[in-house]
Length: 354
Image (tube, rainbow, N blue to C red; front, side, top):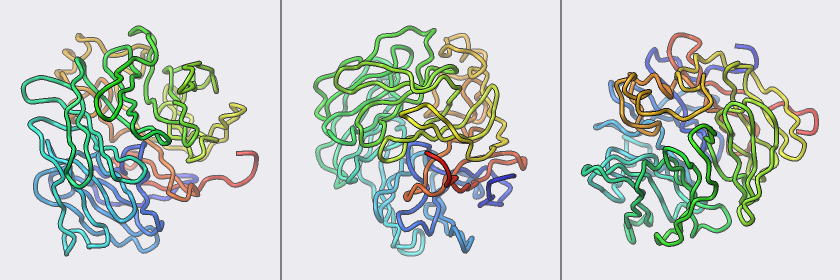
């Protein structure tokens, strides 16, 4: 593929971590990825230069998009448990994973704050309740924050870590709550026909960046809640750089590749093509999935609990999900252009304003 290098080769499903987290270790020597080569989703690391692969987890399958690196630690989810693994320990050789907290339900990805001290994860309780759980990485101060609808992608504010932004499904989408469970509020009231998706923090600005699929890339001021358009573009999965100056995104309908967008000007430059199959019938529309959409797909969960049979929003491993390396010199993404999903890396273009 022009402009990109294939990193994994196994003829199973292989993909990097989710686009809200970097898959590169902080020293840039390894890339963490999920592979189904052993029959269940497990975490692996591959040397960026050497290509040497080591398996980090085994046993019961992990949440395939749950890995998050903070220093030498990687946090991940397995069913109702939040786990941590010391990357220097060597994975299965000597670095045994430690269970941080266990819950009676299914967790989404566990998102750490910038320091890795606090973690938050969406939860779908066994009794049918929804919400999120939050606590310290040492296993203390964990609490359930209930919410009446499905919760997706809770994240800590980068400058005010006592705040958590999260998505509710269905609309309205964007909400926030304090880490102690107080201050729950909707940030933007909108209906099912305004397809707000893939919101995240705009780096160290502390504002929120989000897509109104498939038309707009927008920015919301965290304090005033003023919304302005960054670019009229079909930006799909989005991830900002650390300073909030650029947004990396893939595209769909049409797929024109992976792009960098200048937040100040809206100008964009293509990084590379993806050639991913980009599956999911809902992306052909400009509204959230309704009950009948999920019935047609024989499914009743949302994106953070997707199954191989899903045809509404995925399966997720057919989406590129581009993300920066820790030094922001490269990107990782997924492409199934070879017939199975694999990890790819591309260099970020140097010339120009971006």
